[in-house]
Image (cartoon, rainbow, N blue to C red; front, side):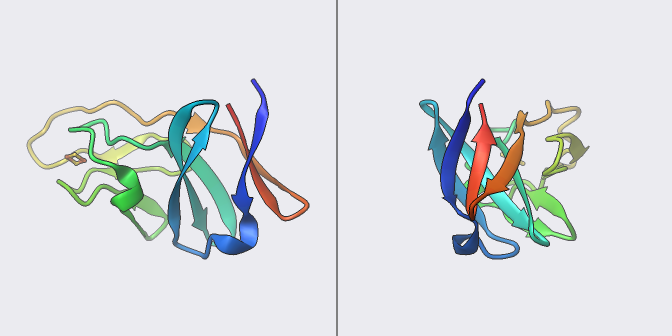
Amino acid sequence: MNWYKVGKASSLKDGDIAKVKVSNREIIIMNINGNYYATSHLCTHEDYDLSEGFIDDGTLICPNHFATFNPKTGEVISPPEGAGDISPLTSFKTKVENGEIMVEA
Ligand code: FES
């Protein structure tokens, strides 16, 4: 596991989601109330790109069928209606150092 710089903290506004590359894989980083979180970028329902998703009330929502995830842990809060269980997202540790968002992967 290594820490990777993924961008300036000041460039990701509250509620923003950005897709970044770490160690040859794409992930998303999110700013929620000044806290930075990172998870895998594909929805576990039908692989929709969650960088197109949105944050609502501290949760990450897939706009395709509205699966809801916990941005901090990747856990599923609610699957799409009628879809049954779906897998959690992979979550990654983050930290901010010298104004840079860092992700461990
Ligand atoms: S693809 Fe994300 S909820 Fe269906």
